[in-house]
Length: 520
Image 1 (cartoon, helix red, strand yellow):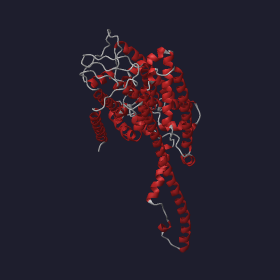
Image 2 (image 1 turned 180 degrees about the vertical axis):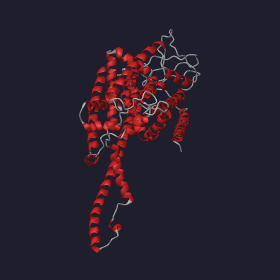
Image 3 (image 1 turned 180 degrees about the horizontal axis):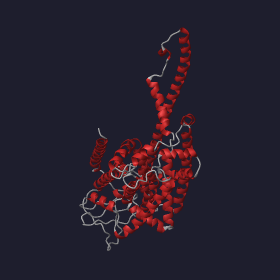
Image 4 (image 1 turned 135 degrees about the vertical axis):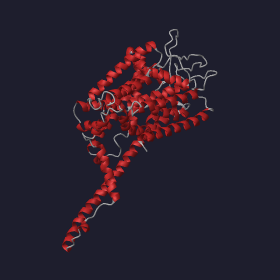
């Protein structure tokens, strides 16, 4: 079957599965009122407007969520740029093995502070946004909130498919947020304590998944060592046998040969293949560079298609459910205790930030330190370490994401850097538009279909490019919101959710700040 046919078959399967889940949840939700108790409601929670009117207006937004959403979108680009710009896993391994130089320290810093953490922050804010949406009042004559929510998730998934297929962003998060938003919908009314326990359980499973993969490597290595022992014995026995054959005057050379069985050869090859995949090779990325420099859109599509398939199918069911699920549930729990709306004193936010960031950074340092050892000699690392270097990575990223969240809320409550936080909030209000714009700009800048800068920029230059894009998005978001109430992608998404064309320009007479369905 051609790759394109496989892709569409996969998409049909995923979308069909999603529709089946959607229908089941819809019927089960007929007996569930999707609202929050007054104790769970934030002071500035959103309220669903009267949809019987021609226009839809919303109450003020939660500023901290807008700021966090903006931070997550902008700083996620500093990790996304690795994939867009050709800073491959192979090149990263080479830097870790070097253990010196500016590029090594720069990569270690960005990896420690941002890699996985911004994805976690996106998921946390998305979880809070889920409950904001589900907490809206159902006005007389309006569609039930859970109907609108299912539409919201369905169209978000379609945006994710567009981002992956048309914009070539193989690490898209919208598709995963859409799926997890539906799967976690039944937990919306769970208590905050229950959600914290569920988030911890998901995180524990994620850690377990990392260990199970490592355990498979340990088994592969044990089989390899057993085969090596057999091979040594065969070599020794063959030498003695050859001497006996020569002494007996036998001329048939085939009688002198002893070899491994087919199964033993496969077990030996499995470990050698594993090492080859981990080993740094300066020429390993040559094929990818050549493909990414092709000017044909169809050629790029065929080259990137398998990566998108692996990410949105295999990775999702192996790791993505726990990766996104744990942080989305954590965001729901934090929202229910009023974490995003100044429910606690500033000193507590600062204490949480300092503790979470400190522990998270220590775990990150431990991970990078042991990752270097594993790259130097993986067999030796397996012999000396019971756990893989990344076994606690899910906990590391959760702590840092919560720490960043607490620190941002602390500064917002302190009333400092108001101009900066307002600018970040503007980006957050246009999160979907900015996220899609990042994919489009990077695709046009780096691929051969566009300007062809893939693998032509240094690591530092990639980050400088990300800074330029971020500054431009901050400026554009600020200017846009002076004229329009929402971004173009948010407007389209909102129209699709409510099933009608909604006003696009800001109403000057309105004294209520407009709000929109939040992507994160």
